[in-house]
Length: 83
Image (tube, rainbow, N blue to C red):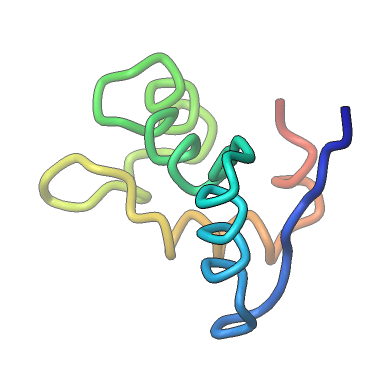
């Protein structure tokens, strides 16, 4: 079995290739969908992320502000090391 990872910038064709794989019967795991489920409000992952980064990463709806979290993580080497 081969595992292929699709990466690229905005509008680089990732969704097009992913849809071609799906149409050909090739299973596709979308990491964005997985991440959204992990960070679903009230979930174990949500609780761990809020404990690690603080409530300032939450929107008024208590959902994770993903762009704000991303900015925090990718601007700090030490934050990227959290487990």
